[in-house]
Image (cartoon, rainbow, N blue to C red; front, side, top):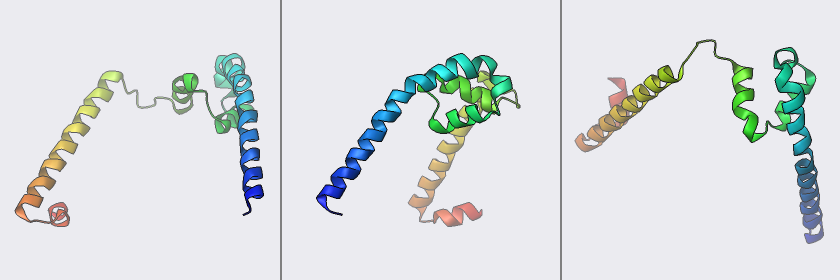
Length: 114
C-alpha cells in the first residue's frame, strides 16, 4: 500500500464512522418510540433484527436483551447471587487444588484425572 492509498482508506473509515455516529440518535429514537412499546409484536420483525445487528444503544441494552432472551428459568436476583457464590467457591477450591498440586509436584492433568 502506498501512503496515499493508506490515507484514503483511513479517510473513508473516518467518514463511515461519522455517518454511523449521525445515525445513532435515529436508531435510539426507533428503539424507544417504535420497538420497545410494541416489542412483543415487533420482536421478530426485519426492523428489529436490523436494529439489533446495528447495535443496541448502551442505555437500552439491559431492557432489550432481557426481552429478547427472556427468563424461562424464572431466575431471581437472589437465586443468581446464590449460584454466583457457588461459582466463586468452586473457583477458589480449584485454585487451592492447583496450588497444592504445584507444591507437591503433581501435574494439573493428573489432578483432573482423579
